Image 1 (tube, rainbow over the protein chains, first blue to last red):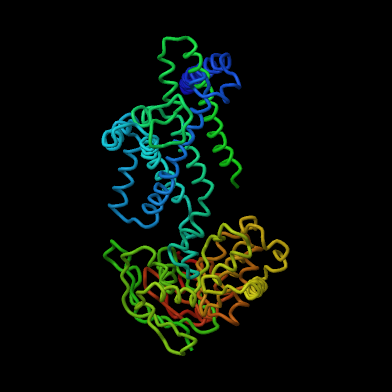
Image 2 (image 1 turned 90 degrees about the horizontal axis):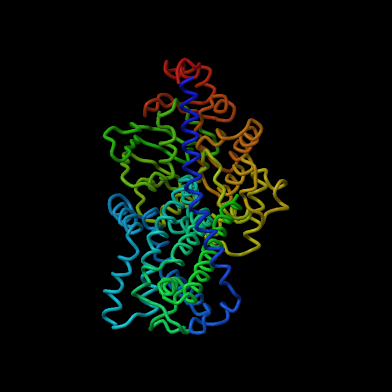
Length: 268
Length: 260
């Protein structure tokens, strides 16, 4: 009797907790969709912020995240390969632990760091500084995904490659990475989704711009930083635009995340 | 004439004080099948994995004694424990191939799997590659099942087919010795029978060492059997002698199922 009762209590408690958690998520999404959709208009994709549009911000955000990926993905992957395949003992473990700590570093700290080492010496904010801040956020995520996906490849597969006379780097690149390809790609996509919506690392590195630009050496348009600016504006029209921008950003991140999930599910 | 001569061989894993193999002396005879049997932990897999030095993937092992391998080209024996350079390791592993317990198809097409070792060997000519792949697949009794889907992923094959593919892949580079580490323990009886038949056929071209937990398998396919126990080689003889007329008490106890 008592066991059954406890069972029921635990089941009820955990169901309620799950519902509370989901309710907040639903609340956020519903608010975002209602407020965002009411101020959403397709002209947002045509005009730049100076004309009350978001075109330059969306493109700018993707360029910042794209540049960060160009820097962060190769570095993170190669480092992940090093600690899983080549590194031995304490040195590899040290890098692994440092990377894990980096992953939980507050993003505003990364922003402040890049501000100190790039923005202050160059004298002004720039797209490059923003990309580097995002890349610093991305590297530990890519390291950790690469590391854990490679660890799932059975050691027999490596031995089989070696036993055919392949050298270690050939086994890693022809066999091990190929087997872990889907997992690594998914991880990279999720890392991209993680940084594409970041505000804090960009706040004082790239800042944002009202105009369309591809010049990474100056302040660069950023959707997330502009949301921050617009949301604290006194004008209602600015705040409406912030809702629309938040809606678009959320949908973008959601789509990238779902793509990642979809790839994993279709993996055999 | 043995293709491989193991002499007073001892092996110690890193971080362990006692050797896992003690003073093993054993020949692997040419074009014969040598079975290594014994209870779990007796060192038979450790011995097998020393014969192509696959242990060296994980550093810190200690080898003592000699493992002489007959080089077919020069007709001379060479101690494989002296090998230090990468290119010598590659040559060793082309001479001494290995098949694992679980099938290990590479994540690529059936053709590319079999061609993998050949490409490493430097064969680039397309027609030579496809001839060698076809010959290897025919030699592994897989050709008729896969000839129409060579470009498809090897992951789609059944477990038994995957294992025969791994054998084809190893045979393609024409090794002198093939090491089998419990090749059928993950397979059903029908696939097991196919693999056993294949191993017996391969004997005509290749010398074979096989680790098995299955004593019936050892008695069915092997010419020579070595019984190992706790890192010692207890008895080595013709298979029929080991199974019908063992000299050592421990061998008799093991093969009659009194322990192990």
